[in-house]
Image (tube, rainbow, N blue to C red; front, side):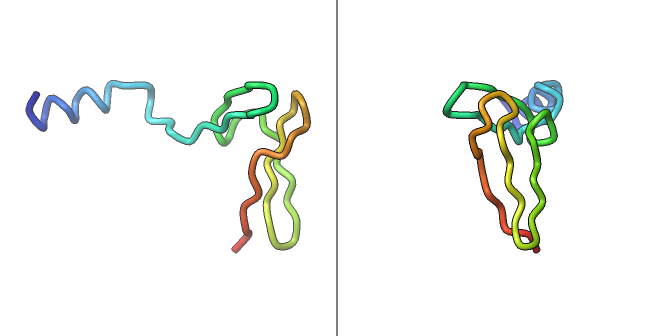
Length: 62
C-alpha cells in the first residue's frame, strides 16, 4: 500500500475521533466529550463514569 492510499484509508475511517475513555470498573466506552461527568476543580479536572461513579482520570488544569 502506498502513502496516498494509506492517507485515504485513514481519512475514510471512523470519523477521526481517537480520544475514547474506557471505564475499567463497568466497561463503558465513550468519547472524551461524551457522557462522562466532568468535575472542574480549582487545580484539576476529574472525569467520572456516570454509570458506576468511578473516577476515570484526573488532569491538571493549566
